[in-house]
Amino acid sequence: MSQTTEKRSRFAHLGGWVAELVLVFVGVSAAFWLSNYQQHRQDAERRDQILASIEQTLRQGIESSKVNRAKEQEPEAAEFRRALDAGEMPPVRPFTFITDYSPSDLATMLQSGGVQLLDVQTAQGAARRRISYPLGTGPHGALSKAK
Image (cartoon, rainbow, N blue to C red; front, side, top):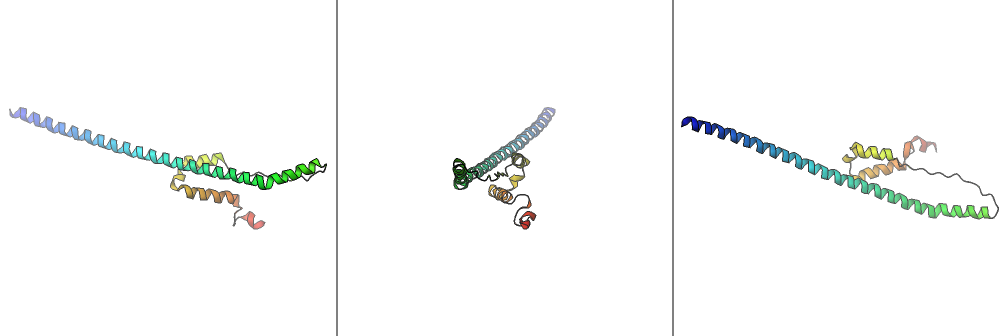
């Protein structure tokens, strides 16, 4: 009987170790799954914030363009048409349209993950400053000193 009892105790210990091993494996797997799930949720929230910020910036740009057209471009166009209809040759002024929007820059910024270190408002502020003073034309840039 002692051999039977000894075999049972060995199987009991082995079964306990296997049960502990399975329990630890399940616990660690659940922890990794939960961490991954939380990270995906945070990434989705961050992406939604960035897309909302981009949408807001584009809407502001559209509104600004509408105001600019109504205040400046339409009166100038009306004066040009009036002079042309009167048989005069109105002076042709250069038309300049500059945009600092670059889809590749925006895609690089979003895909690199570096923007995740900044909150959305900080990233927006940095983008506004870059747009306001492109390529060294800022308050301390070489082109602004030459003017």
